[in-house]
Image (cartoon, rainbow, N blue to C red; front, side, top):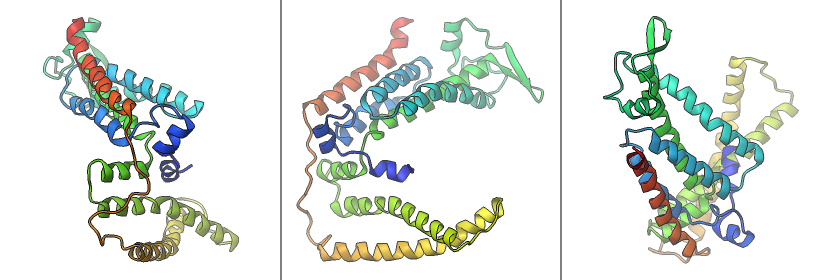
Length: 288
């Protein structure tokens, strides 16, 4: 399934509550964003690697327990996160000054906790030493980056695009002209995907083959771009006529067909998430 189709096919909050889907699907979009936003902001200012590591664990637990996913996806998440952190710790650490001792880069807490000598050399690359302090600095940066990604997934992996727009319009009072126009544009993605598949199928039926290799692939993409653009213009014209027929933008407000309601669990999620964020940020100071 493509990314666009995956996003559109996510169940809405109303359907998730009716079907008793995992708890993350049943929460309203803005509540999930408000619950994770303080932690995302904190990841830009924290220096120690322990707080983002704790948040990564908490986010992993929330995603695995609250989002509907296959066993393969869950296994990919469990295995992929440590692999990504390990790779980023080396690639980011390679940019660190090898003469740094870790005190100024924020790696000192990790070096002290693991009783490591920051000046020790792990390996050399093109005559440039890769020190323990450089690795620790890269590890801290990698943990913060992965923590930001997982925190964003908590707010988005179980959120339907339609619900997000409705939440902006109904709860934050974003003008519906912008919100529902964005929703209409968002729904173009899976339609363009299906039209592209039809165009490619038609070319195969006619026996049009550009051969193999990157040049042939580029030429095939350019050949499909023109009919795809023509289909996009036709679809945009139909959407514009449909919106005009419904007097879209005539009145300052519109009657909502689907009301996105918050419940007690939504209001409880935010303080729980904020307390967990504060505990993860204060845990290194408490344990030291």
